[in-house]
Image (cartoon, rainbow, N blue to C red; front, side, top):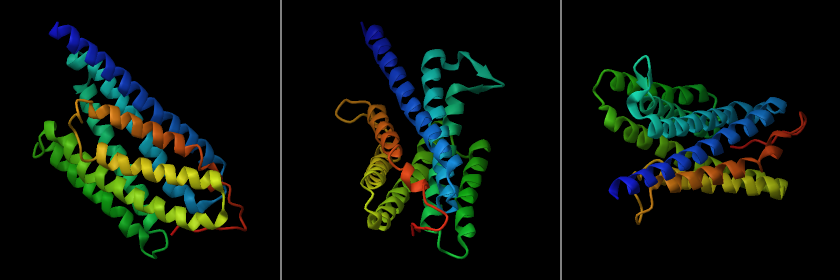
Length: 237
């Protein structure tokens, strides 16, 4: 009986990871399509970081689903699905941190210096990880808190600021998308950055899946942000 229950939970988690990953993959293609067609350089660089986050986060979730199905029986040059998931998750959190820093420092003359800081921190994390100073069992949680939580909080702040600046345009659909992203990343910072245990018996992955669906849904409403004409520039900081 216990094995049947365990098998049922494993199957449910597999589907959760698949939906979780698919949501972010869809978000990546939606953003990439809009960014390729935009003439606005104001938003392009920062939102490519957001697209990179969506892609790596989605692939990380799919790697988790693969790990549940095959476990450690399959590996490529010693890299298992679990290892790949951890690496991709750390990269995704670096992307979201870069997105938030890029958004919040856009007007600063030496903004490139601030954008380098997350990369330096990430490099230090990688060195500690591969040197064995950070245990593999703790690598994911450390990466989530240091990059995922901070990136989620800073992204929420940047999006709230973007909302107030774009509010003057009175574009309801765009404002709805920005507010949806802000709320989604606020939840993301909690459920994907701090918490790692079930809540009232509900697996934390279920909450992460809902965050992914919310963020992805909101991303379809921000296409107007990339439709600025060359003669009309709206800054976001």
